[in-house]
Length: 255
Image 1 (tube, rainbow, N blue to C red):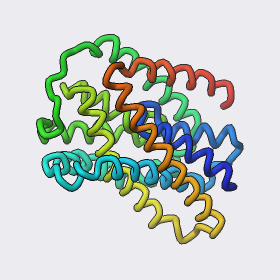
Image 2 (cartoon, one colour):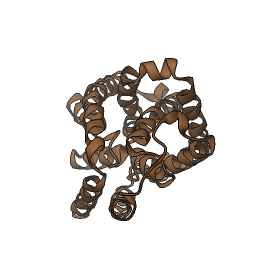
Image 3 (cartoon, rainbow, N blue to C red):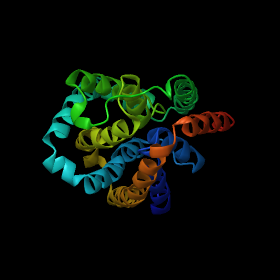
Image 4 (cartoon, rainbow, N blue to C red):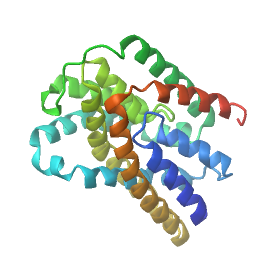
């Protein structure tokens, strides 16, 4: 992978990490378009540059992370189910799921249809939990379980978390912010775990590509977060569901 491809993939990651359209799925499909083969390094790259996007959340929400102990406790509780499932499923995920374009496209289509149906049926339902501190620990565990479904490429971590949170009564804007914060332990641990397993095998050129993708995803994600927060205040997720279906059908022509 050259630097240009790394930067392009970093842009894709930064734009899609916090939207309910699956950043991992878009990275895999973008790699396909760029003719970047799904080597072990590329799979690690697709996991690791997500940490760049996550760093943007730390920058934006550092006050919450350091001062709001109620929010932090709920984030950690939600992280536990994902961590357990991630450890158990890591080898299966990396060897058989990550890089599988058919799984990605299928997940995009099914997930898109689910978002559309959910918004049409439940989108106008009154949601009572409007602050992170009001989310019960039981609901935090459920959110963590919802998020763990996104280990399947193309499902979307943000999408699973947001839809799952809304389904159990959490206000749209509140669950979006919670999803951002929950991404911090989730993606940093995934990146760290993978790098411990794989980084000794990386060459100097590969480390340069990884750094380029990381920095690019960080910068782009800062802008994407601000856009998404403004969007969800006045809109539902229906456009993202439609987009997923369209992009999934389009990529059926390539696989």
